[in-house]
Amino acid sequence: MSARAGEGGWGSLLDDGRAALPDALASVDEAVTAGGERALVVRVAGGLSVDVLPDRGLDLGAAWWAGVPLAGRAPHPRDPGPGRGWEDRFLGGLLATCGPDNIGAPRGGSGQHGTHHLTPAHDVRWWRERDGGGAGGEVEVHVSGSVAHSTLYGARVVVDREVVVATGRPWVEVRDVVRNVGDAPVGVPLLYHVNLGAAVLAPGSRLVADADEPVPAEPLPAGRDAVTFPAPAPGAAYVVAEHPGVRSTGGRARAVVRPTALPAADGHPDPEVVVEWRSATMPRLYSWAWPAAGSWVLGVEPANAPLLGPERDGPHGGAPVLEPGASWDCGVRIGVGTPGPRPTTARPATARPTTARPTTARGGVG
Image 1: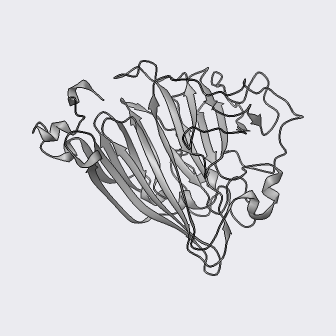
Image 2 (image 1 turned 180 degrees about the vertical axis):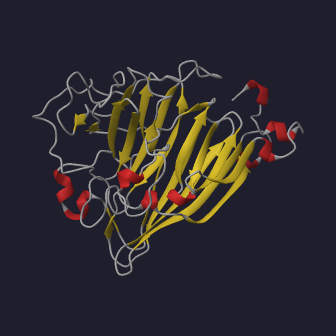
Image 3 (image 1 turned 90 degrees about the vertical axis):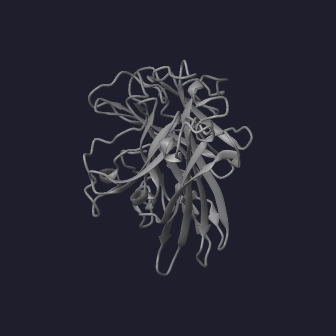
């Protein structure tokens, strides 16, 4: 929080009359992107600003902190539309949700990474509120809606989503309730595909997670490890890895990107990017590192089901089963922080073909 906001938070500017209206501190503009998709452009004082995308399951597009973009951007200028595969339609953005019918390679009639990210949300609304409900404090923006994944005679799953951004807070939080509104149990795989881009990553940036040693899906390229970015190079291969044994504190798991290319700003002298998620419902973590010139991106991917390997051959692709009428609470928080205690990750993985887990055929986006 900036000292200019006063001791009580940015909301104090409303309380003492320096700001006449809440939208002077936290604005929401309804826009249409160059590709014709709806976007809710959320801008907040002293916090993280983000585009929420109703036509992409209320996923997150561009995100900015201290004037710097955080999100990775795919090389596609536009979404070519229905009839093309998930990878061809993937534009990047801070968050692309995968599932709830599939994650990873196509399986059992479901396409790569499922339907959520390409399904429009319904009952979308937004509002502001003061945290704590009293004087001072921060101004929160909430965006909510539902994303239905239904078949006429089969599975019917609904994801009720709420996105929260606030003044004075350098993070965005996505809160999901996943409900089985059908008549039969259904396996529900989910994966939060958090995408960090060029303004965050520098040669030497590493993904540090409180988990065991990362296991690459395939033998590593020469001179590479699974979690450290080299210098960008034309044609550099991507690396997908699993981070087994994810540990949590207070029910939340955590992965950190450090060091970053972000500039020092307002109480963050050496900023790092932090991804946190609810470990009870998302106990797994994968990563996708692609340091090619023109495709500079890191995917940090909490999940509840196997993305690759023989577990996908089991019932429901290894996903947990949601009973009729039951629901799960899950979510992810993405933001900027200052260096704290290091998660106890093991040393970076190097090429070990004998220990890499078997994979099924998959596309280029992990």
